[in-house]
Figure 1 (cartoon, one colour):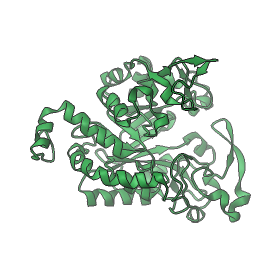
Figure 2: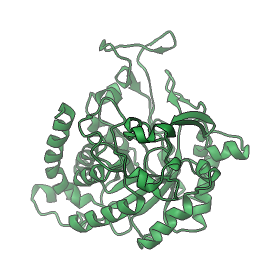
Figure 3: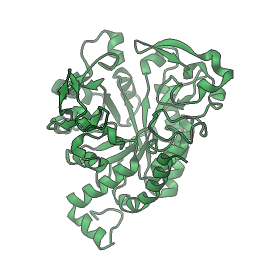
Figure 4: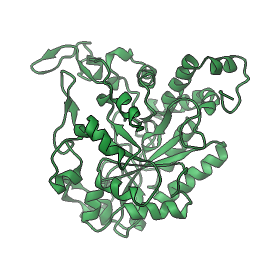
Length: 412
């Protein structure tokens, strides 16, 4: 067993104490947390430890306290919705090692860029079920690669429903329609298939534990006419420059439906006062890349790039320092929009120097800035930080914890 897997199991066990506390902060009947921000399991919330977008990663994320598990949807050749981060299966499955599918490898244009691999739309669901998930990030444990199946949307919904009943707390799904314009172009649009599945599950209704998100805008406008579920406009970017400015380079510069419709503008335009006002007409919130809220700059710049100031032989987030936060959260809230930034990860190389190697410090910074939820690969760290945040910000809650007299809602 790898050291990462051992660490994951140890953290899962340690999180049980945090879960006892976080149950007080779980989501209420309206889908928002009774106390504190939502913990949204990015690719499941256990994806820091297990191959992502598997029922096993969802189970771990839920065990670690996630309020919602994220489901990224792509379509198969025969019109089923499966849960994968991208239509290209090459990085998240073992498809490249299976000789029966070797001839399926090809290059196509995805959102204006050539991409080589194996694509979900070239496989039937029966063929997808022959594949197994793998961990796409090399620094994470690979011991369980090839063990877990690729779930469908329906399987994921039923699994989350069952876990919610077992745990006695509200657990939901946070669905992303991946590359919707691309899927429309190949005759496999996602939106109505998604809504049909939610309707069959009894979840295409106001108050159901479901969010729907997209990096594109046209499909969210379409969904707005067909569902009362909360919709979230994702806002992407390419990188952060040495001075902390957001880099907007193709293909991460704008929603792809804007490219197709020849609309001018960039992702960042969605976060201006006019952009937020527009988003408000069809969505209930924004999911910005977290540097839009709190960016960082190089501690030292050499040759136009960050220098290795800590001498560890690498240049990464630890060689950067935080800038003052923007006012994005306050401006979005002033329009009644939720704010759910992405993606929080616990590896040391991903933590700006201000966080001193402790992922809780990053969560606490964003919680204190007022975000309504966070996307995380490590639900245990997000939950533990939320407990710290609540202990600090709610004296009544803190007193009930000390006296072991907390009820389901600390404010009751």
